[in-house]
Length: 193
Ligand SMILES: CC(C)(COP(=O)(O)OP(=O)(O)OC[C@H]1O[C@@H](n2cnc3c(N)ncnc32)[C@H](O)[C@@H]1OP(=O)(O)O)[C@@H](O)C(=O)NCCC(=O)NCCS
Image (cartoon, rainbow, N blue to C red):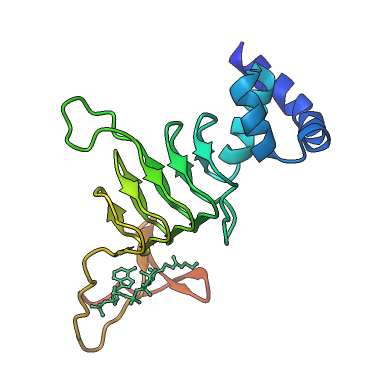
């Protein structure tokens, strides 16, 4: 049954996309429409649109304005319960997620202010409030409130000086060693360990 559904959806999908573009102009407008007028078919098309970019934007999330994604909405997760202010910038691989664990200190969902800048790979988790104009550094994990105009960064990366590092990537296929050269695997002698 689900294969049949998938097939029907695959056939309908291009027409649905065209219909959404003509009727709503964008998937962001469709999102707001779906909040008030749930529709299984349009919901499926909406989810599919973001899934194609490995992303999820909860229909019930509150967005004061459409966020700006400098590198497209790639690998972005915005929880159904999240609240975002105006002109939020979101780089790729960002999670804005709730914490529903019973008894957890961090229960709740993020509330993000206006003009917040969220760097690549950042995670904002649970019941935190991020003030207006905050900056969140690449890969930072934010689980505490941030006052307006503050910056969150994760612990600094350690730079360790070494000598003669060889980063050749070896793999064994049917007993033969291979190494990567110019983006291809080429047969090589077993490396000296
Ligand atoms: C944090 C960030 C927003 C810069 O904000 P800022 O207000 O200009 O901060 P500063 O550059 O003054 O840096 C403050 C401190 O955080 C450190 N820092 C900066 N970015 C950091 C990061 N991502 N992770 C850890 N530490 C970081 C700086 O080294 C500096 O440390 P110091 O005070 O010990 O010298 C920026 O560095 C960042 O991470 N931007 C994300 C951009 C991005 O994702 N680009 C993707 C393009 S594809």
